[in-house]
Image (cartoon, rainbow, N blue to C red; front, side, top):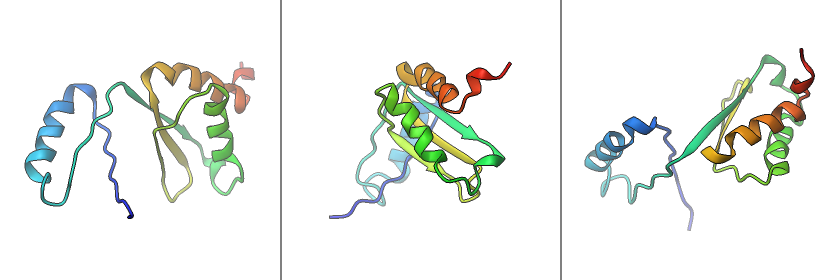
Length: 109
């Protein structure tokens, strides 16, 4: 069987209100179940140099893999100017440091 999923990111203070609104309006109608993943962070890699450049996404996810971090969700716009992904809060800083190393941003003064 195939699956269709929709992921929504909400700020922690708004989570209960968002879940309640989704349950009231969609649960049992268009949506079978609602799951939450607390303590998650969004990391976004943004830049005009990404468009049409082969291997950017591979480098991004290699940076996460080097820190043994699971990527829970991925989103990229059709403009190819940004790539966003979600990791556990506890892994966020480590992945950002790894991204800086992977793209040699740690060498910039």
